[in-house]
Length: 179
Image (cartoon, rainbow, N blue to C red; front, side, top):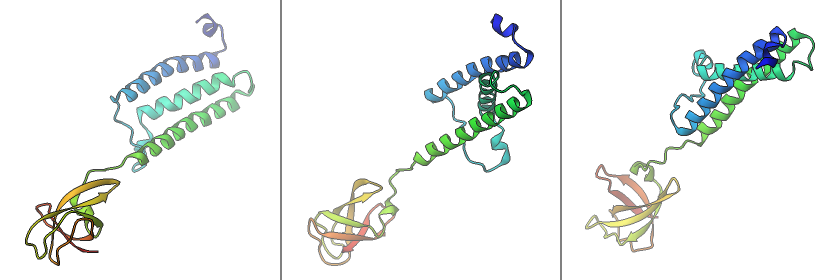
């Protein structure tokens, strides 16, 4: 750490920011991958969403390491701080982009019987006509095939026939008609 103590004041400040912030960033990353962190809301619903501890860490990480990296290259220290600030803001922006992509991957695949309404199904077990008995249909909802009890108010539907769901009863029974 002697090289930090012998460096110029601005470079020393950048190192004093970069080292602990990098450690905090690594700890945050490990906790995130372990599933401990649940503060990953990338929505911009309120302006305060921008001012979070994670975003502060992201900004300071980009700011400090950009300042250290460009310290010898950019001689004008005001310009160096401006570039480091832009890189820090870029880190925060990249975090929002990455998280918004992860949120797009979230999908609720919970089966809801009402999603079968007006969908085409295949008769799996013969359905007696005029609601005289139950049969079964197979129907694909959100990429998953489900087997559901069914009745019909029309003529008997034989196994393999195509049917359309016209009504869903509260008991989870569907009413179908020949398609």
